[in-house]
Amino acid sequence: MSHVLHDLHAEFPDDGDILHQLKVSDPHFRAISDRYQEINKEIHRIESEVEAASDERSEELKKQRLLILDEVAAMITKAKTA
Image (cartoon, rainbow, N blue to C red; front, side, top):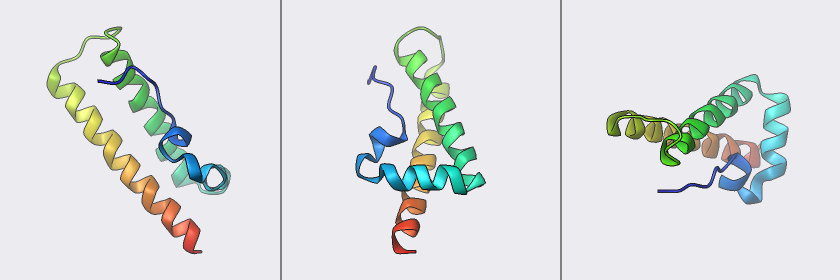
């Protein structure tokens, strides 16, 4: 259980320039980045016991966060090869 709120730059520390470039140039990336932040904040509130949630809800949010991270990683890889 982590009580540290990580943004995408913390998850991909070596790719800050690419993350910035994608955020300003790709509306889809901007949308999934925003969604990641929403989900991550909700997970953080649950883990910090600020907000109550069932185990199922917590696990579903974590799965959504992982799917977004996978998509972001793929977008970063694609941007590096472009």
